[in-house]
Every structure is written in structure tokens, then in C-alpha cells.
Length: 262
Image (cartoon, rainbow, N blue to C red):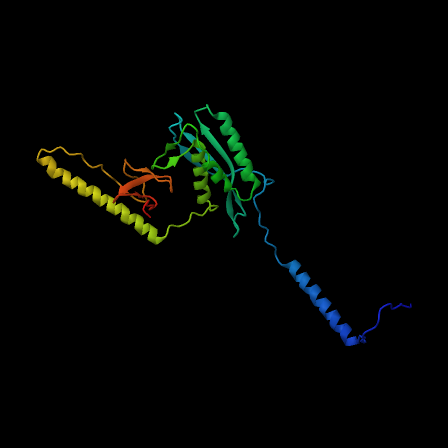
């Protein structure tokens, strides 16, 4: 069969038997490597998606909300599904959420909210955005303080805080650790405030024995990681905790260490 050459020949070489053998060896090695790659075990990691069927048994946690907006408490239950159980890829992911209460005034929107949140959970992916969206909801009638002096702008915001705590417990949200220097600063401020309170109380006793009437300093109990704070403390805009006190002429937070003076 004749082949017409339309371009100018700049050079040529003769393919020897040795060259053909080398090319065949390279092709055989490539085919062998591909076969070995196919034989290697593939990690069958199951990710959360909406086509996963609900198991018969789910692991759940129930949280109680006692809000001054309701006469009866609300109970928030979040059920988790365990993915890749028994493997190194085992993980817990939220699957559904329920809210139960004797108060039926807000039954419609509570059911709607939980169904939408459950659908988002089952969709998979990064569901942590729900926390920021819910905590940003404000009640036009005003918020309230829950136990510990933490300000909640609305009931939905407290539900968002509960979802945040639950996602932290299953490892989906990692709370940034407080530095040692910041912990030491907070401990120093708490100790200074306690010492100042005890000093004022000791000065009141001699005055009372002489018949003088002086106002008694408030009894302050600052324990643990700031579980209780002075009754006259105000709201800290940084950590949303009622732990802001006046120390040395400067507003100082006994919970996060924030100081208005820097």
C-alpha cells in the first residue's frame, strides 16, 4: 500500500527489534500496575445524604429549656445516626430533632421548624450554619437571661445554643481553646474581685459593733468556670454573659476576661 508524504522529511530512524521489545515491556508494566490498583481495597466510607434510610434505633439526647416566656418547659430531643460503625471512619451525625411541651400556643411553628431542621440534617454536608442562623434571631418583645446569666435574645436563639452544644458533643463543632494566659488573667480578676468583696465585708463588722449603720457589700460567689456571678453584674457584649463588673474604674468581665480599658 503506497502512502503519499505531503510534508518535507527532516529525518528518519529504523525501528529495531530491541526497540519493539522495550515498548512491549513498558506496556506490560503499565497494564500490571493498573491491575494491581484495581485489586487494592477501596475504603467504602458512607457520607450523610438524604437517601440514607432511618435505622430502627437511633442514639438521642434530650435538653430542657425553662424559659420565662412559657409556663411549661420545652424538651428538645436530637437523635443521631452512627455512620461507618466499627471502622476508623465511625462518626455521629444529627438525623432528626423533636420539641415537646405541654404548652400548645406555638405548636405550629415549632413543628414546622423541627421538620425543616430534620430535613437539613438528613441532607448532609455542613449543617453547622443552622447554629449561627438560629442564634441571630431576636424577639421584638425582648430576650431573657437563662441560668448562669447568659443572655438569650429569643427562644429560637436558645434552641440554636442547644444545637451548638450538641454538635460540639459529637465532634462536628470544635470550641476554640482558651489560652493559658487568658485563663490566668480571668482567674486573677476573679480573685481580685473576691478579695475586694471580703475586705469590704470585714470593714462593715467593726462599724456595726459601734452602732453605725452602713450598707453591707453584696455576697459574691464566683466558682468554677464562672457558673455564678455577682447579682449586680451587667451583660458583657463579647460573651453575652451577665458577668460585667466595675473594677478599678473599668468595666471587666469575670467570664471571658474582656476589659473596656483594654
